[in-house]
Image (cartoon, rainbow, N blue to C red; front, side, top):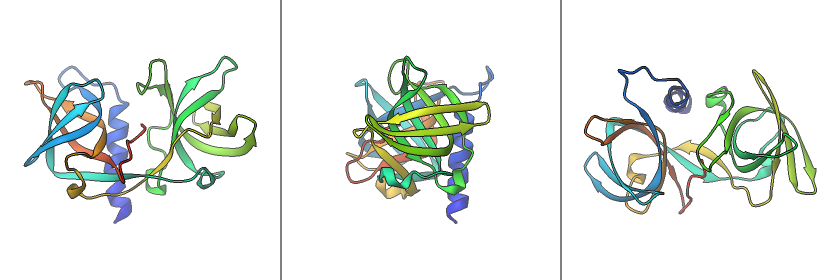
Length: 203
């Protein structure tokens, strides 16, 4: 059941990284707080202060984002890291999320990200992890290369759990990797990640 649940998130993340043809709806990443729920429609205050109207699919898939520990990152773990490139070619992590095994291979690679200006995202398998002066140093490998990632103590470490639509309520903070922009300016979403216990998804 869990594997089937996360399969949808794999598809959504892959779609978000795939160039869209002109006739296809534009994919939009959403980060914000739910301020109102009107049936299948969420009103979300985005991080730039704008209000977004998002219509959920009837069978919307929800995942919970929860805190976990750096010690859960081990050789062989499949992780995603948003980071800032460093002059020496390494990446300084802004956050790390640990993918469940059912999501292994999701959007593998290293590419630009938009959590901060000039930030990157690396989805890859951990080769080794070593404690260092500035934080944990993690070497990750993906199909086209590898990266050295410094994870400072302040970087949040999170993972995914199956969620429930009931979690999508005012005050909840959400992340949508691939909302689709509609001709009227509203958005539609088939999958939503929601922070639990007041957590803001750091992606």
